[in-house]
Length: 302
Image (cartoon, rainbow, N blue to C red; front, side, top):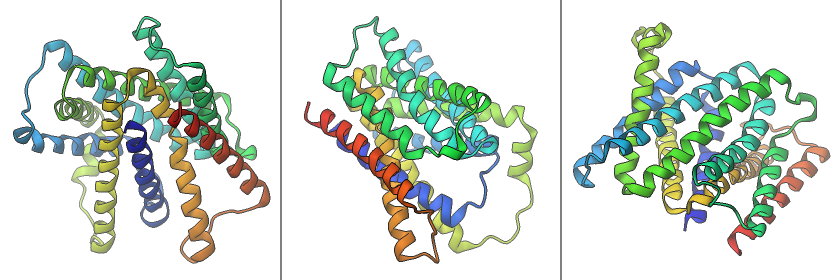
């Protein structure tokens, strides 16, 4: 069940990414402003509180959940800041490869070495990580020392958020843990709001006339992204602790879907999307898809 839900979440995220990239966003927004909105919108989860038996857990669980939410927002900030400085082709393969490794390491340490993948699962994990790196790699835009350092920092906090989130779900029902995690994200967004004046300036500035059609598409797309985030969290909730690193490694599936969608739209509707296609690129992408597919089969039929 957790594997199916993870794949569905990445399928939706691929569509969300495609809409953001080609239809709405001309450039990446200010990372501080972006994470403020993400963290603030996460607080909408409180609407569910009266319907799911929301309760206040032990102090240690509150601290854990708030730390999970704030770590995610902090990691997201560094991801978008790094993407503003360097091309995505330098950052995404590094973050995509490092995040599962950090997650596996954190789980191993936190469990005292008890949570370890089997031999078959480890092979699948390596194939998924290699496929995730390969599908985003571009020879002419290889990672340098600075971009690697920022990607390392980003990957650590995103991994920490995943692991802390799983420990929250080990002791709390899904929706209760999700709400407390969302509160943690909001508190981190609030810290950003207090510290950085450019966020306040952006929020309170006078707006030009808004394109209602674009706004509607944007809101629908963000709602879909929020739904995918809930599905990803539910997969974390369902999966055994040892498989949390695999959920991160499965991120390559999102880029498989993205490549297929982009290729189809580029061939059928070149006036909307024009994707760079060559024999070398096709070979690289297909090789990555094979690696990811083999990893997925080994996990599904272990």
